[in-house]
Image: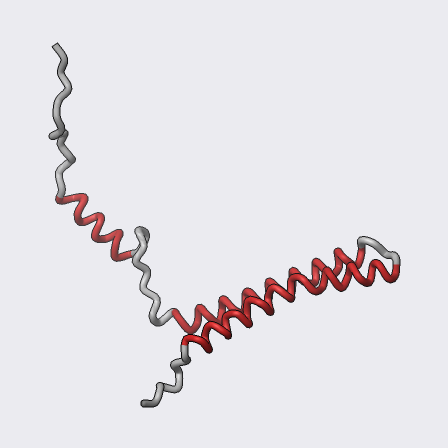
Length: 113
């Protein structure tokens, strides 16, 4: 039995996600570490750490943005919001609120004599 070409085995998909996450983490961590090492060698502390941190932040955020853009493009056709703020739930809540009566207090009364 052959798999459709666009379907990946679950392990392959999991390994791709792990690869993306570790690559993004390394892009945040390695530039400041490299800056720390260069500061130690050159005696320019803390300037190269700060440059490395800024560079790592910019590169890491760019990678996160590209990943979310890629994931968003692949899932938008199947995405159906079903939370409390979705369009379908708002319209059904409005319909039910106009036809229902306010709740009545049918609990036991607490009267003491």
